[in-house]
Image 1 (tube, rainbow, N blue to C red):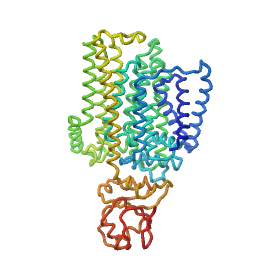
Image 2 (image 1 turned 120 degrees about the horizontal axis):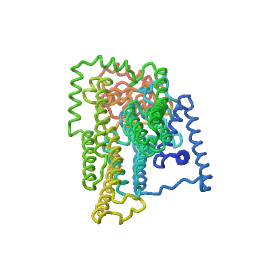
Image 3 (image 1 turned 30 degrees about the horizontal axis):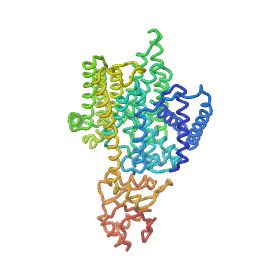
Image 4 (image 1 turned 120 degrees about the vertical axis):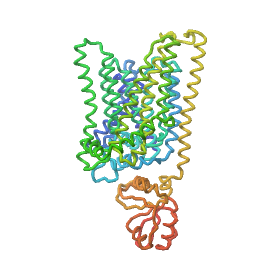
Length: 612
């Protein structure tokens, strides 16, 4: 990693963050706001064919802003108000660095890294542009490029590596998670701050199918939505800052993945409710202004996504996972009522099962919110909205269940739909979203139930009794302990996963040869003794990513005659054997008179040449 390059990127990020703070952005949202703003600028540059130039200039402008504010800070009026360092800041910094260090030394293993997410980053990094119709290396051409653009920007300065990719995406996630502290009324109270830290740690439990050592966006989507919601609350009394915030976050969310639409709807509804609740104008003025403000904000946010859809339709004749009402209608017409009922029965069985991780998460959220409502309402004699919040989150779950079932019916082949392929992974995103929303409402309710409501008077003696003081201190210690323990568990779990994956196909390819970084069309045969890796195209996708070619395929079955074997091998330019394949080795000995076990070989007419 280039530490100088990383330093330049960070200086640019600080420059944008300082600028946004001077424009009214919360310090807890300034990091993620600066990142998303740069993503949107890079998106515009990429769409006009200037990605590399855009990456350089967007960073240079940030560095210039950093220098400007540094100089102006010598004047008192230009200085930013210091928010202070709190206990949750130490938690975020210490455990964030620990997780970042683990991720930097983590390999990419998950299938979808090689079918799209990592290969998209590699393509943009080495080609400096978005893929076109001729670039067959990219299969899912309708997927928007937001996270890939951000990761590519970081790699431009740090150098290309899988660890740097993971570190970049984690920085995006961690900056978004930091935004939740913007909702705290009193940040000096350790209990509420550490409760949000515990929420961050618990959220990774519901991301267990993916973890952070992958470039998939199943956690990115809900955490960006959470940051958007935290910002809506923070800017509720500043309508134009609020509109800018919503427009930016919605625009980038839609450019992360097509399925972000559900999260955007949640954000849009909360945005509209906030405008209504915080209106101080006459009703006839508000009746005109609020709808216009909401439509203009969300309409502006949708423009980048609409441009992307236009780009996909005009660039690619056929695109996987493209949003198309005609395709949905064709899929539905091919499904019989009996087939749909089978999928529905399987779907209901899954969501009603107590063994389902997402169902456990839904129950956990409800139990905590309802339990807290009872304690605050009857224990502290304080009215609160937590019961209403629990009901609202249940409605979100029900609506997402409906949209997920629709996806199985409209978008998936029956063979995948009947297995509810990816169910826990998709539901996990919504559990994460609602977990954070519930926690943000909970800490607000807890603060409102405290004995002393005047922040200036809060100290070690501002408790109703010694009993409540002791309960607060013990509660803080318990919550802090579990916040640290659970986050540490995620870190060690990621380490363990890395160790368990030491002999997986991608790491075997790394041991056999160096990665290729020049986009090519070389025909490569992957000799894989595992039939499943070949059947689901994992071997081919991993090789396509590693050797940067659109013509890599896997094969497991070599029970053929020597003549057919030679004909097969000769149809490729290279052969890679990541793991010993008994049949292939025997046939190679018989046909080419060479004893070959593993490695990368160039195919010649009468022999195979080992490549180093």
